[in-house]
Image 1 (cartoon, rainbow, N blue to C red):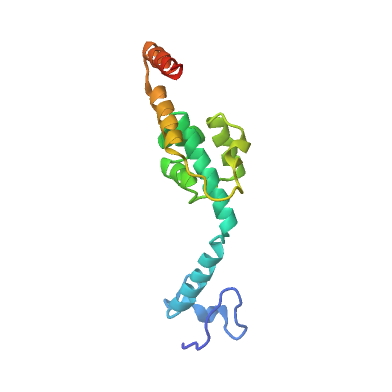
Image 2 (cartoon, one colour):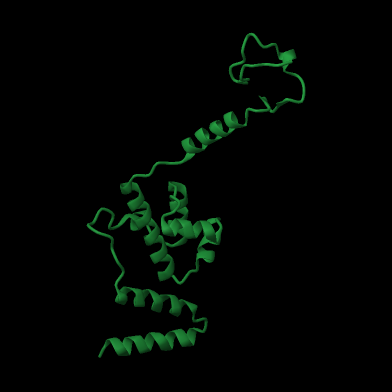
Amino acid sequence: MQISQRFDPFHPSPSIEQSELTGLDLVNGFRSGDDQHVEDTFTLVTSMAEPKRGRSTATVDDHVGERIRDRRIMLGLTQQQLAEMIGVSYQQAHKYERGINRVSAGRLFEIARALSAPITYFYEGVGEEGPQQITLHQRMQLEIGRNFSEIRNEKHQEAVSQLARALASR
């Protein structure tokens, strides 16, 4: 039987009886030759699912991600360690830090708790002019903190602390 109308499972044509639609040419509600219709529908649904982010929201996402990264480094944690603490993969933690994926309110709460910081910490500096670049001095401070936390021997930690105090008093 030859049917010249396009079959639409959501709006069946009254002139086509369901019994007429049997046979191998009907697969998953579409007749053979309906590939373009399926592709068009898929493209429409996919494009509807993509969020539209304006520059201002992307800037905030980037800023929050940078603050997460700075705090993690300050505490001497790896992305893997942070990810385990908040229950996500390290790839997801990386995407949060880079502002690629937005951090939900619940997830930010978990991150704040894991990093021992108030939620407001991650928004400090939002809206200030220009991107805030970490200076070389700040980068060194973060690195010192990270390296210090890697020292497992308490006597060595105390020795490094005394050295820093001695050098600072000069």
